[in-house]
Length: 259
Image 1: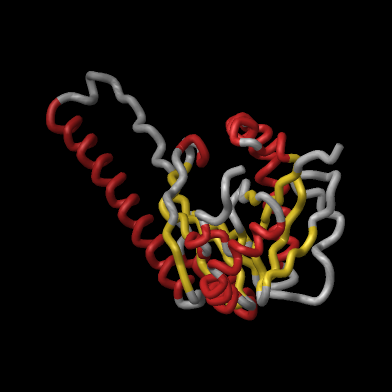
Image 2: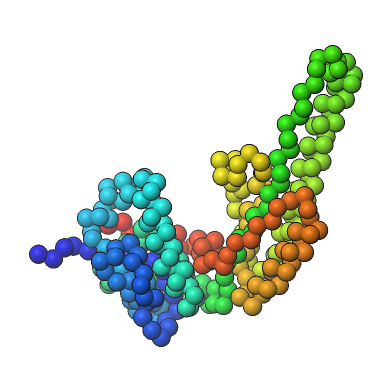
């Protein structure tokens, strides 16, 4: 008896010579990651057991942190491998279809949008820039005998003003970083900064941004950020990438049908 399967779609890309990147287990190591042609587009897909990707099974899987992380990593690995070969539109985690023809129909329906996106992404990659400011140390407690009257109020006021000045200086420095990187980018997005549960208590996340850059400008970007780190010693600047263009393909977030 044949086990029912669904077609899991990882990405849509421009046609290219050769098979899907090899040695990728994807979400189902029992079947190969493969290409599926749909006119001028190619989908990167894999057969997965329908029972493992029913609505209830998916709900349970994605609510389990360890399983979610495993799935997200496998999804990302396939997209990353493909994006090193050709322009690629990443699809959301758990993009599923009931067979190859459903995939082809979906791609035909949005063919113009996919082709436009792929043309825009060709030869470009996403880079992430994060800027952090050190958290001010807690004020030193002084004895009540010393901290009395106007002197005490002046100290409190000065500490408050000092914190505000440092925060404003860090925010202005982050804006300068963003302005410099935007000069290299063809597109940019501001993302929500992380909270203390991610950054820890010793620093504050003040800029979280993604930039789409021509691959030929990577060296210039790195050199510019090295210069900014020297010029802006009060902040920490982190660069990550290159990434597939996750932040610039939101128009396809609703791609896929529930099993």
